[in-house]
Amino acid sequence: MDRKIQSLKKNLAAPDYRKIYTDMIEMKYQEKKESCKALLDRPNISFLEIIEIERKLMGVNISGPEDNGKFRAYDDKAIIQILKYQKKNRLTNIDLSREFKISRNSIAKWKKMFVEI
Image 1: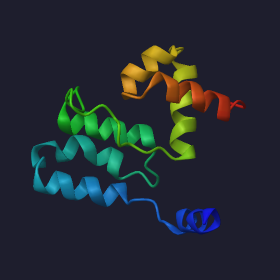
Image 2: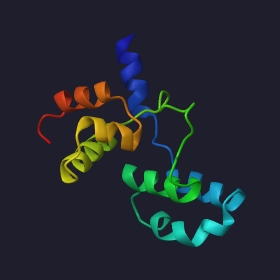
Image 3: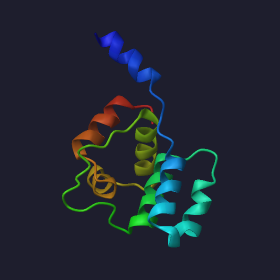
Image 4: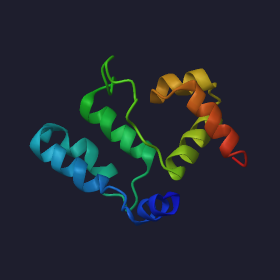
């Protein structure tokens, strides 16, 4: 059973964030099209750039108090980028958890998993 799940995970394609956010801008946020255009025109959109686009579109507070990040999923690239961001900006686990609305326990677990960073 585990092998089937692992093979299914490998076959899943990553979401096309460029298409998702371009459509969202066309439908809801046409006035913010120019401010996000530079980020959407890049060949590869990273996790931190996606967060930046969300902040530009929806304001400083990405989510309300009811959205605690419970249903978010992070791939290995995103986790590594978050940990590098923490190291670059000299943030504690608490600071990083507040910035990205991630559990401190998740950050500690990621640090144990990705020691080489």
